[in-house]
Image (cartoon, rainbow, N blue to C red; front, side, top):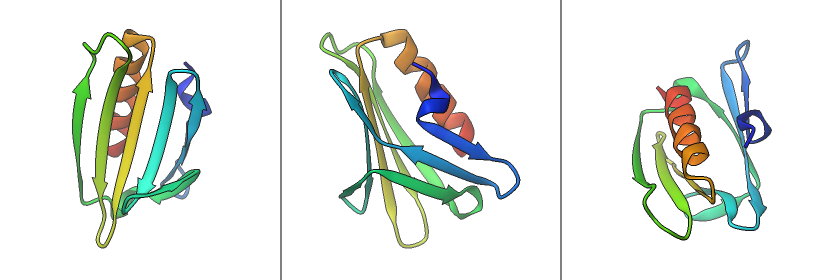
Length: 99
């Protein structure tokens, strides 16, 4: 899994572009206030805080779920995949971007 295929960082404008993905058991779902979208461009300065829940022990697929809280919106970022180690690395990568 190449993280840059699903997240693009623009350091000049301080924005992050999150992209949805679905192929087999590997899936990235992005939702704003429970409405599913294909991509989301987010200015990092608007992030108030985020929460993360992880389940890397699931035998069917490793998964993590991040909720990003903005002023009037809740963004849900849900990732599932077959490769447990890659999903763990991806989770850490996403959290490092949001901090």
